[in-house]
Length: 361
Ligand SMILES: Cc1ncc(C[n+]2csc(CCOP(=O)(O)OP(=O)(O)O)c2C)c(N)n1
Image (cartoon, rainbow, N blue to C red):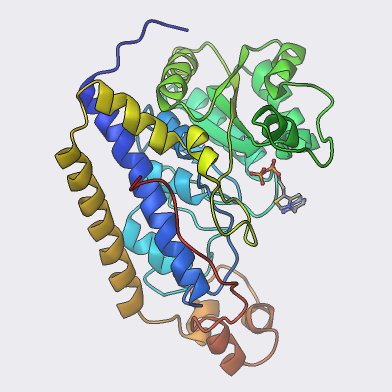
């Protein structure tokens, strides 16, 4: 590790970003429960340190490619919260006019290539952006987020190989929440999915640097990514970084209540203690950040609520798909009225959910 000095302002920004992600997701959970978000989504709760620590090194002209747990990545990359929330709610003011939803939302204006419902699907695409930076010689980098499950996909391994062969300015970020990591954290494992202990060991096979870090320590993430991004910008090629993470509530039908001992791996809880001890975060500043982020998220909810749903006919007109009739039936499964119904926010599948997250503890 480098001897990187991280100043107070950066630490507070990292903290704020994590709080923003947690606040947004907790609010989104309530909207899912109430049926206002008529779609499925993975959650990023417990992994915030990775998105915050990575994206702090990137500018809007750098790209990230994401997973089915994209909200944290998108928020850390600077997506407009109003339009992000509107997108989740299927509203026409959403980032993608309400057509992408939680699994495919994207915002190229901030370099967020978006969520991806296909496990490992975004990884090869991100390499294309890295190649574009290399060809332009503009010093830009691309970052590819993926899970340890995705790391076994052929496309991910091919991209690692190609990125290494072409020396692309690409940082691979594997967020490992595997059963093996969960076992290390004291939980039981149910099935093996990796033949190795560390995904980063695979870097060796491609002749690129690789390392594994605690993904619940935002400073460790920040420091590790600093080196890799600098190397990529300076023409030093790709890196495979692995961050072990504990998903506090990753799944749709996940546990309703976080276990008390999970606060150990809650990146926000941990970092709050550290910067409080350092005298950087006072109770007043913590409260201010919480209130500001809560009101930003509430503003996003209001914006989404006030926004209209897309008009079904416009869905096909505004689309680049060629056959409007096919588009309509693909979206609705049947008639225009059904399509309108499917976007009106009255889903009834959402299970009862509770909101939690150590922010107030
Ligand atoms: C190509 C493909 N296969 C299977 C699925 C179903 N699926 C959704 S999430 C998931 C697990 C992915 O694991 P990982 O990449 O480790 O991410 P995590 O959920 O742990 O964050 C699977 C198999 C999918 N969406 N896409």
